Image 1 (spheres, rainbow, N blue to C red):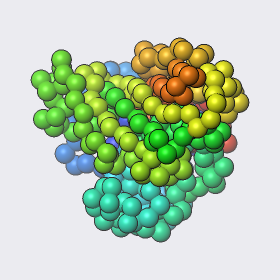
Image 2: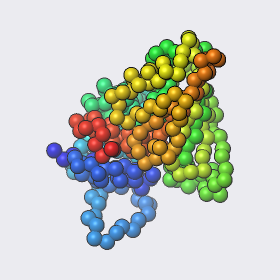
Image 3: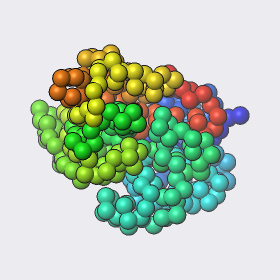
Length: 335
């Protein structure tokens, strides 16, 4: 069976990445869903088949027989579209933060806006397959994780599950991202002259991705310190995570914890003790690479987690979720 899938926000960075990756998928037919009247026209090569296009009207989307729609849109657009699409039987994979949290109160605090569909917050499946796979195949609405929480949770949760982290000492996550993580909408902070030859921190302690890390890892807010920083590059996330051991521990034991947790996961790659990933290893891939250093004498550990923010942090993970939802091989179009 060929599934019809639509992409709303296909001109943005994550949306364009979705279209690129979906073109390699043998089981889907991609439709471009227009949601902006003022969208610019982009030239296309002559002789190429015209992309299928449809307006972002829920009735029109349902009538066209679209089986799923990706929302690569701001949260307010997702809040407007997702409920109507779900109501019409269209499966939704939302790349915004609109449905990642569990309560309207939490959304109000971290996103500084009112949530208009609180019932769907409780229903939405959090789409981090390696840690939350069970609910994804049957979900009507899948909340694709944020890029920072993807890298953080994949690195932190196995250590917490194994009980080797001294939670009272806290975990510090120092996260760096390429500029595409801010989206395509122009702003002074992400303009070329502000970013090039520069390096800056933002949203210290109150970044809206923090509650996603807490929800999935099980940490309390007082146990986790997070600062986001903007790298003068286009794509990629590298997080340096600091922790202290709760018990006697070795680097080989940490390696075994990660290996046992992720041995069957096709998109997680673990490095040997003392070896670290870098951004070049993961750019334009759906991999999350994890490396670490541990000093047994002092009980100090440093974990480095690297992903491409537009692939494993957005479009690639969204397709991974679609593959689970429709019964494809989880790696289809991604390896």
